[in-house]
Amino acid sequence: MKLSGWGQFPVVSCTLERPRVQADLQALLARGHGPVIARGMGRSYGDSALNPAMTIDMTGFCRMLAFDPVTGLLEAEAGLLLADIIAAFLPRGWFPPVTPGTRFVTLGGMIAADVHGKNHHRHGSLGNFVEWLDLLGPKGEILRCSRQENPELFARTLGGMGLTGIILRAALRLLPVETGWIRQRTLVQPDLEGVMAAFESSQDATYSVAWIDCLARGNALGRSLLFLGEHARRRELPDRLAAQPFSVPSRRGWSLPFALPAGLLNRYSVRAFNALYYQAGRRALTERLVDWERYFYPLDALAHWHRLYGRRGLVQFQCVIPLASARTGIARLLETIADAGRGSFLAVLKRLGAQESFFSFPMEGYTLALDFPVNDTTLALMQRLDAVTLEHGGRFYLAKDARLARETLEASDARVGSFRDFRRISGAGQSFASLQSGRLSL
Image (cartoon, one colour):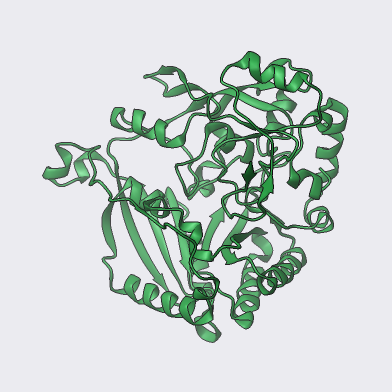
């Protein structure tokens, strides 16, 4: 069947298998017809969960296995949705310790990408909260991996993009919370220097993320709305909310039924949207209560929002620039985008904390993420953004990648060779592969 990532680019024909029990999964691997790749909800943007020969749909492995109400340790199968974790445990006072920008992802997919969220500067990536995982290896063996047992395999699976084995089960520590509300504070910043200074002075905030106007130029380069957040305590809610602290207003879901015309997103429409959004942010309340869904997952309210970008789909550019060169690097990226007139209205800036890992994306610095419609002009622009990233010592997020060149990845990340060697020596390279791993020679 035809499959793609969330960006709808590329779209390829894949043999898709949907095993429901572990024995059937092991039997698929034992066929020996070539390498396979596991797939969850298909929310990685590009081709990291695509293998034409065999793609294995893991969403049938979706059971919750055990939960400790004292420690918050959840044991579950890898195909369990983050949305289902929230639905089951937020009413009991528990929330995911790290979350990406959508709740429609699987536990195994989050571990494979070692996702980060708005709190990386404080709490790091999801891997910090994974106690153990069970991995199906290249010979069909099942290995318990943790910081004490098979520690290197455990560490390389975090951020390994499904290329070390198939994650079957995992134990994740949840975060205790008192309510389903976030105390949000909005800081309006007139330029890039202002928003970066605000990030640095807000290191104590649990959550921080900025929407950035990537088409603003001159003195307004990098003008932003910085959103800071804290889990609200029950005593901080008004009486009408405190009575049922986990009950939040229901959101009416909308769906985009078809892809919009490709030319609808252009420099004029994006510039107009960005100007209106920035001005609306300036007029909004500086501090207010926001429910968890609106704060963490605003785009989930519009199903198939990727169709905004037209039939050819979208590509996302996401890099992280190390702290020492972040000011000049992010400025140069924004200047390049503004000069090209190909802005994104979904432009996000975050401050990442320090992290050492075998292959995960985050490092201390600033990460910029932008969405672009797929066309020859934007693909050429992204190559220029790649070059700016390399000039400033940055690297790229493989969960968002659909078109990076092997040479660019190698130049950006000294860990690539070690990851390749591990896959070769362990045998994982012969059993697990994706279109992305082939493109990047991983």
